[in-house]
Length: 325
Image (cartoon, rainbow, N blue to C red):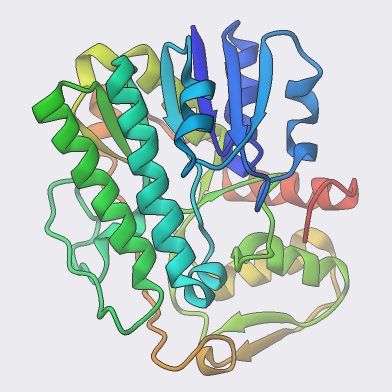
């Protein structure tokens, strides 16, 4: 199989490219390198079966060229990271909505099966814990920048599923919950690489708010494995939405303590008000928990990599100088 991976030079995309090549598939990686790095693709670019196209997913010509001859698409290219989203809601909307439109239109013209990477952010202010795929969604006010990401991703889902129903495009939606691991950068607000960088520098670990907010962290290896499973089962799951994450909740204050312990750091923990970090009107989500029973039942999804193992992998990558802080 020949698979187009958009956002291939990013964190998840580069891991997916490596695993696809390991299984004997050919990979075309598309990325504009605005957030990703060719360094993430060092292993893939050294192997037969991989080709790279530098281009923007909003560019129809670049997308059509990359998709030519491909048997499937995994669309991962997106503006992500809370800091980037809050600071540039317009860019978030343009890349995440328009870029996905272009990819889906190209896939529709060729009938190419497509996995769309969505996000737990679409659950917005949901108070259903854990959140199920069929739960209603309620996002915040358009006056608050963070919701531009959720809005764009909700649109992506509606557009993809409309093309499936009306144009028979084979499509699957994967809602990812806090994917973490080596190669992830902390530049855009990702909490694990940010705290690990501080711990290794023996600086105070800055925990926003009071640290009682929880997140469910899922190792990139587990996420990539289930994406591969979706590719292999496409015919039986097309038109479906799946939560992909690890339902184990971790308070951010506990995460900071674990990072200090695992790095052997002398760092202390410093609590920083959200108002000191983000613009006025920022809204924090205190919990986000996936119900993964559908993925377990239909895809045999079983998150196995522990958070401690993931932290150790990220720490090792920092020590090896392989991370863009």
